[in-house]
Picture 1 (cartoon, helix red, strand yellow):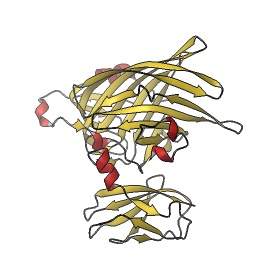
Picture 2 (cartoon, rainbow, N blue to C red; picture 1 turned 180 degrees about the vertical axis):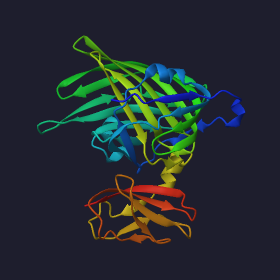
Picture 3 (spheres, rainbow, N blue to C red; picture 1 turned 90 degrees about the horizontal axis):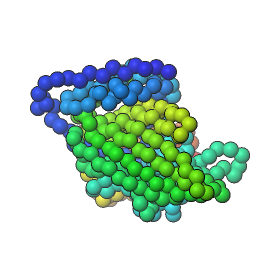
Length: 340
């Protein structure tokens, strides 16, 4: 493992760079497929905790990527456990079959729980953490440097025949803003938040405590996290998690209602390879183009202006994201397409 974190705190007037604000446009959208670089670097907590304040430059250009993975964001109603998370309007599916159910609103990003597929001899089991009655506040929206929040959450967990209760606390502070240097690019207008989370699981009168310390960098110009680092403790030891977004998408709509109105549908979906798909959205402006990207974020096909019937000949089976872009190339709407 590497410890290659160079952190610079730039002194000087804070008026040089306007203080960025993070809000709903910076949260992922249904249909997003985000490609990340998973790294094996060690999280240096003392250095991270020292690199706070205004006009910080965080230099992580030396991160050691070991694999390329994906997060896919879907409508919770399309997942197997939708009934367990009735209030969620966004579900993030990670490369290791973990489903995180989010409530995205005008005032906060909350989580209603998680479902994790446990691999093994079929039938595979599922670990579920259910917080519908008392969701966990991840972060208040909007937020900017100097903000902070705290929250308690509670619920239950289920894993096969085992069940118990969950209680926890989370303390969060927005402790810096400035410039973030990653292996793929340099980003300005970046805000960092830092939280400490404690979760106590109780079963048959016995308790087990899990901890998480997380640092996350978000850009006012993009959606999804640019970089995430965390230290996880299970009571027996700790493990580190480090990843960065390899191709950040631009900031999106300003509300969930607007998100729902700008997303569109295609028919049929899933679609058999070789069969055409039809865009079902009224009032597509002149000059609108359609782009299809695969699960790695690679552009695989561009369709002509105002095309509403799109060919799938020559494509491979899998999950894709279809984007509508305006004449300037700005994303107007996205949806997920499955080819079989």
